[in-house]
Length: 302
Image (cartoon, rainbow, N blue to C red; front, side, top):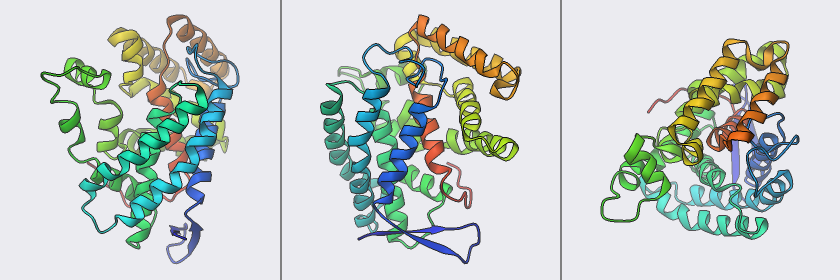
């Protein structure tokens, strides 16, 4: 059985964690995100957001089949630790495709977690690689490994679409310069590390309330993340509207002020009417929740 060596707050103290814990960690992050309420335009306990083909039950069913695959991603990362990191992504793809097949079977063909499979598959493989190499499992080291896996990914997959049918992701990049989930992964989840985590840590230090910290973090992600999910359904106008509304709420204090939660509910209602769902920001919020369970460690920037 593979094992994870995780740094504690005291550098001299280490805790051994079985590889299977990746399953529970990812499951917890995904369920924490989907059950967080209220989330503008997103599936939560209150409603199905701007979605007509998925709800809380479908996300929970999807999570139950997606999370167990994370052990396989971990093992793949562990067993390829001596291979150049740029070559690992190709080896992870078949695992990701099989995981996605299980997801679609569980949801009746609805894409609930495709972005999460991509993100958490990479993160789980990165943890496995660090363990195999005897390195501390820390937020920045994990993200640095993801960046190494994905080096050159945007250039290879998004900027060379001439002469073939253009996918949504390729279209967003070619038309607007938005690199989406691939760009975030290639940067080592820079948005999460430099924007989301500092907000989450600050609000946790101030309030000790995980829900408030995550909701405030989500507002920051909605305000500054160039979410290609929004572009897919509302064009740049939809993206700009969500960013401006989130920035307005943040200027007013976000969920940390009286009336903040009610303002979030009102924005939820507005995004539902406009059929706008910031799914990319939701994925990054789940990544934030996941990474918060590890020590920060040394900073790597890409």
